[in-house]
Each structure stands twice: as structure tokens, then as C-alpha cells.
Image (cartoon, rainbow, N blue to C red):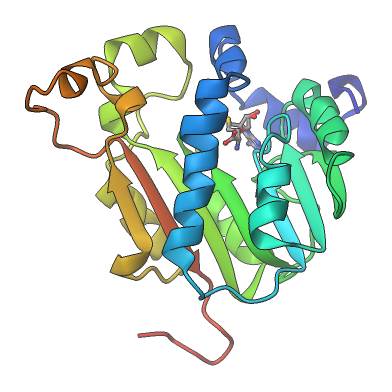
Length: 247
Ligand SMILES: C[S@@+](CC[C@H](N)C(=O)[O-])C[C@H]1O[C@@H](n2cnc3c(N)ncnc32)[C@H](O)[C@@H]1O
């Protein structure tokens, strides 16, 4: 679907959307992104979850870009259906193509996290990777994910933190709204404040080499690393089961 055919709601969402820079879009198609950012995040999520994940029927990949995660998600979580949603129509066309390489059913749609075309409580697992820091209304996006997630369902949320997004070269090459960026701790608190439950054992904050000021050179040559503040955070956030406060 091209933006020319968007219904008014989607047009409104597009107007409040800050499109990633061309460099940023290209970077997300490189092996560095695939191997060190995306694949590692999915591997880490699997580790964080351990055995605490039951049969996944409907998996939503929100902000799916070109669908590069589809095959990895299929391999690790064996869903019956993957639903890929992204606001960028150009990327969705490539995601549709990526979906044809999966064994499971894959449905892709151009849409916004602020208003998903999905019923309440219909999704078992949401993969939301590197989307939130692009949103000017993060709370609204999280509330919509909460709405579509089934009670007992899981949100896998991976984000870049302020300490990374504020680096000079990141600001120069990529594009995100500036004022709403958060620390790892602030992201966890934000997600909890929307009703999700997160246990400390299911949070991983880190400073991977590609997110360091000097791209990990200092560390590689054995000098002590000065940077302490996490640049990346992954968390497993659960929507409580009905009748269960979880406290
Ligand atoms: C940094 S990319 C991450 C892509 C993918 N999740 C990954 O990890 O490789 C962020 C994606 O979010 C999409 N996006 C931005 N705002 C959105 C919104 N309001 N609703 C849905 N997708 C959005 C962008 O078009 C982009 O494809």
C-alpha cells in the first residue's frame, strides 16, 4: 500500500512521524545491524525468557522495517502467524517479500503503533525492537501494545538509551526526536507505569561495542573503559493474567 492510499488516521500518524535518515535506513540493512544488534537481541531475549514462554500463536513484530527479524523470530519462537507492522510503506513492501521466506503465515501491513488494526487481547508475543526511541508519544504507543497483548502475553522490548543517542556521531547520522530519550532505568519505569510487570531477572542492560563512543576501540586494545551508563536495554514485560495483580 502506498501512502497515497492511506486512510485519514494513517495519514495523521505519518504526519507526526520523523522518518529515519537515509544513512540510518541503510545501516539497518547491514550485516552489523543483523549480526550484532538484531540477532543478538533475539538471542538475549530467548535467554532472558528461559523456559518461561508458552506456545506462541500470534506474534506481532511492531516497527518491523524490512522484516529482517521474521525468520529469526520464527526459528526462536515458532509462532503460527507473524504480523509485521511498520509506518513506512517503502519498508513494508520489502517486509512482505521477507515474509515469503518463512514457513509460518506472515501478514504485513503499513500502520502505526499508535492505532493498530488488531483486536484487544489478541497477541501472544510482541517483538518491539528499537522502535520506542523513534516515538514522540512513547506512552501512547505502549498503551496500544498493552491493549492488543493477551493477558499473560509477553512484550519483548529492546531500546537504545540516551547515553547512546546523545553521542555526537549518532546525532549526526541518525534521526530521532530529541527530548524524550531515556536511560535504561527510565525505560523500565515507563513500561511498568503502563501496567506491564517486569522482574529484575528479565532485564538486561549493556554497553555493546557498536554503541560505545569509540566503537569499542579502547576496550579492544585492553584499556579500561570509562563509559559506565548502559546504552542498550532489553526487557521482558508481561501483561498480567486476568484476576492476577502479580504483586
Ligand atoms: C530502528 S528501526 C527498527 C527496525 C526493526 N524493529 C529492527 O530491529 O531491525 C525503527 C522502525 O520503526 C518504524 N516506525 C517508526 N515510527 C513508527 C510508528 N509510529 N509505528 C510503526 N512503526 C514505526 C520505522 O519505520 C522503522 O522501520
